[in-house]
Length: 418
Image (cartoon, rainbow, N blue to C red; front, side, top):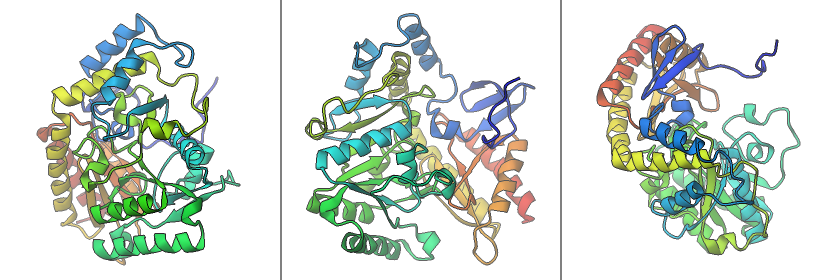
C-alpha cells in the first residue's frame, strides 16, 4: 500500500472532511477555527459559494486550455480584471502555478532584461523551495539544506528586524541600508545587480513588517543604479495586510509584483506583473508552462476578486487585524514567554523567547500544538520556529477573532504557567 512521504511534517493531527468559511470539520465531526487559511491561501474562506459556483461552471465548459496553444475566456477576463488592482504601470502579466514558479519567472525576467547576473535578497525572506527560489530563501536553512551547490549570484542584505537586533526601528533601518551600501562595495556592485527581491512583510521569516523609510531607501537605490525592485506579494497580496498590497503600507512603487496564494481561494495559480516595456526586454519564448493560467483556477480567481471587492474584505482584514493584534498583545503582556507581537492586517505573529531573551521554539511548539487540540489551528514560523502565526481567512468576523483569542489566551497561560 502506498503512503505519503515521511519527509512531510504535519503541523496538526487534523484529517479534514470539509471546510466552510473560517472553519474546518474533521472526519469525526469536530469543528476547528482555521487560523492558517492554508498558509494564507483561502482568502475568501473555505468553499465560498461564489468561488465554488464559478469553478463548477467552468469545469463543465473547459478544464484545461494550454495558454501558449490556445486562449480562453477566464484567462483574458482575469488579466483584464487584475489590471484594475495592480500597481500603476504594471500592465503585463505572466501566469504560473505556484509562488516558487513566480519567483523563478521574475528572476529570469530580471536577469534577461537588465543583462546583469546578480540579485540581492534580504535576511529572513522566503521565496520558495525549488532550487533557484530556495537559493534566494534565508528564512531558515531547512528550505535549502542538502541540495547544495545552490544557484550562484544571490547575495543577502539585512532586513530591519528590530526585535531580533534589540534595537528600535530607526536604528535597525539605518543599519540595514548602510549594510546594503557596503554590500554594493564588497560583494555585488550596482552594475552587476539585476534586482532586489523582497517581501513587504517577512512571512516564513517571522511576520516582520518592513517600514516606509527602508522601502524608500530601496527605491532610491534601485532608481539610482538601474536595479529592479521585485516585491514578493505571494503571502501579503490580495488584502491580507489590510491594504490590497502589502507594499501599499509603505508608499513604494515596485517594478515587478509576484502574486499567488490568496489570488484564487485555494486553486493553484500564481503570476508576475510588470510593465510591458520591461517584459519586452526579456527573450521571446522565455515564459511558458503546461498548467499556467488554468481555466478553472482563473475562473476561481475572477470570483475571488469579486468577493474581495463586494464583501469589503480588504477593509475587514484591516479592522479584524487591529482586533487580533491588540488582543494578541494583551495576552503577551501577561507572560514574559512572548517577547514580541507584530504584524499587519491578518498576519499576526507572537515570538516566544526565554527569560534570557533567546529564541524558545519548544514553548512555541507546545502552544501551537495545544491550540490545535483546543480547536484553533495555527502555524509556526521564524528562523528558530519560535513564532506562532495567525493568518485567518479575510472573511473572519469579530466574534471568531474573539473566540480565537480566548483559546489562545488559555493555551498560552497553560503552557507557560502564567
